[in-house]
Image 1 (spheres, helix red, strand yellow):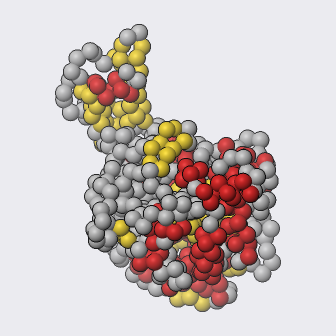
Image 2: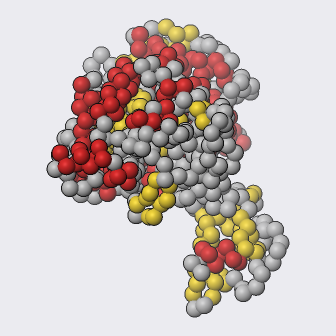
Image 3: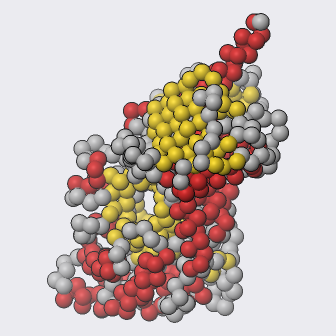
Length: 624
């Protein structure tokens, strides 16, 4: 009898935990008593054509992992219903989910909300639902629960850069599939840059004949050998217009809007390699950059380019070129925005160009920076004529923009604050919180990159800065630049779990933010990602090693992002484990040939990577 009671309590606790592990965290979750069991006899209901499509997606998921195919009919034990009378609380993307012993009912005002309700339903099922093949011996049970849920922000995005490395059509679809599990609804697609032009423009065939391909190089991006005359350009690729249409349709079926980016006037070397006459220097030897360093960075946003990668703002042929590009792009992407970049535009070649100087004189411009404002205004006119709105990085503020332009704030939050106070709509995507290409853990473990961003910092982000009217903040976005990311598997590794943190931030109420609660849900999703074969990082388990000098002594402080792990270390050239010295307080590192080794444990099991740091490295961290 006692054993049966224990098993019942264990079952209740297990199902309650499952219902509380949804990412992003729902607005309201109430765990109830009981479970609903799915079998081959279970029916799935859909009340119209739109809900039918979502029911079919759910059944497809069950077929893959459970091996059975529930029958879809007008009413069923699992019911997907689009409300005939809208529930004002839910909006367009909200839903309700009621699970009892007898079935599950999901309702929403629009198909998008029903789709997100389905994603939550999948997360309520055992983790084996993510299996790529039929999982045997699983009880397909759903805990009794009542959920009312709707998003905080309408723009919940991720950016995928496909210029630095080309990602196949299948890769992009996979990235979309990953996103929608966590209710992201916007994919910002960075299609052009110095390293490749990725979209077919039929009226400008050289953009993909030349601009989509570069010489193949190994080694760290930014340190690679420059391309030589006559070298074959075999590395790259592009999306045909049919490919684009297919991906846009695939995304739309999953309630994802794709925002294309054509990065101008800077970051245009691939376009200039195809059409050198578009630049001030008009150098016919310009080549698509394979990862060669061609700039010097001085800090505080100042830099110098050694190769002209900027379109000429004084040449009318540049605007004729852009009109052709945007004419074809506008047809391919039905959303209202086209992102035009505008970031990191070097103006040194403009300063030396007679045409640019003549334009400045004609327009009574006092500073060369005003040329970018002139350029953007002309680009915006082109876009508006095609029924599109201009969206750009926060540098577009520097030259002045129209009231209808939308700003994406990436250089911290300052640009977003300025734009919102000027009455512009803003998408907050600051590098300080949302740059997913940044190293997410210990710099000696993950491949090095120029900056770091730990999960705790990402989770601390709030898209609405103090003193800003929230009505101007459309939402937020995580950005994945791919200089150091050559594969979709590694793209996933760099995106998650920081992407899960952003999902919470963009969807869930601000007041529900709780780091300890998030980490518990995150760990449950590690198991799900493993079965789904989605790449993810466990850097959150690694120890944090800080060094400082105090009274001439080298001191070390250890810590971790996860609250319930223990940190162990050695300084005697032995390998640490949970029988080594347990960290409790800062300690001095003796002035000798010392190597510090650190590892984290939980319940006698190693959790993080082994970190090995020599005294010299610790001194560097201490600023000595």
